[in-house]
Length: 158
Image 1 (cartoon, rainbow, N blue to C red):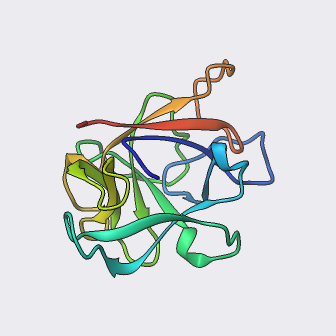
Image 2 (image 1 turned 30 degrees about the horizontal axis):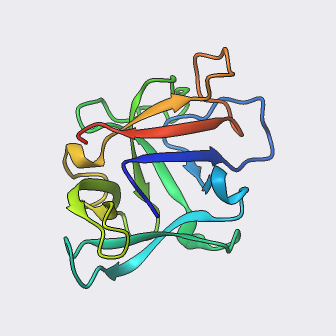
């Protein structure tokens, strides 16, 4: 189930480096023990919003679980791709294969009746429903998102 609050952790072998704007990342769900990865493909929901399906899958190596980390809709785009992402930043996640943004809105999911999480927009362009606030784990004293660090994505609009 996906809701407007996602508990995730970045999967990466080098835990000391900052996650930078423009990085391509995989996200896993903490409550699944890191066994499920946020994924999407070019298929739309048959009801609800009819937007692109986003789900969790168990296949770690699947290319469908790659997401491009970008700044929020009202932010400047990544200029060099080397800027660390600060905790508290507004970000967008664009699915690498389909170029749809991780999105939510007030429409209930056909299965869970909780808020739908979908793919929306075109190559990073969309609306504020694509914006997420990056909340770094409370046990961390860092001001930037470190590779391997647990984070939550809080939806801006809902």
